[in-house]
Length: 224
Ligand SMILES: Nc1ncnc2c1ncn2[C@@H]1O[C@H](COP(=O)(O)OP(=O)(O)OP(=O)(O)O)[C@@H](O)[C@H]1O
Ligand SMILES: [Mg+2]
Image (cartoon, rainbow, N blue to C red):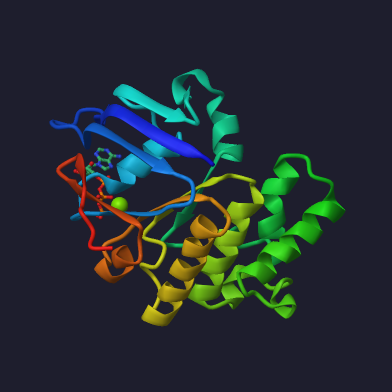
């Protein structure tokens, strides 16, 4: 199962007075649904972008299955190892639902027919009916768009899913549905799932909860 480990990771934005992420050490493993909570500006998104390989730590190391990101091809890491899910879905507006999910497979050279078959499977696994596969994202509800975004994340083959406020634009019922899917992916399929959220009800559903405060991360002791 995948493991993403951070060792004394610090990140400072250019010209910033203080570090946005400060001396963070932790590890996220496959099979677990992890939540990261904390106030606005505490460094949650910055932490996710470091784990996603979008930024490089100012100091410290990030290891994917024991291998230091600093010595990896980061384009490849971003394409194959991690996938991000965002509050605003970020689907490609001019591609259909099916084309959105095929996109990561096209990038990695999967033959079109195979990609399409796999995309349809993934869409059905997240509850998007066949009749909606040819639509553009704008013609779906928010909850449906987020489920398509999850299907697209899975299509990349990544085993680590990083979600930044994935339910932030959804009502309670749709938020729960998205969290149910993310939980199933962790528990049944062994994905490593890290969800940043303000929503404490959602954090409650997680196996482990981490709290970010002024750039520092600490694990909460949970009742379960
Ligand atoms: N591009 C940037 N350049 C400089 N500073 C930044 C940049 N992005 C974020 N910051 C600063 O880094 C700190 C952490 O920001 P970050 O976006 O990680 O917080 P967050 O916990 O995700 O907040 P929110 O809950 O509001 O999304 C904040 O002080 C923020 O102002
Ligand atoms: Mg944020």
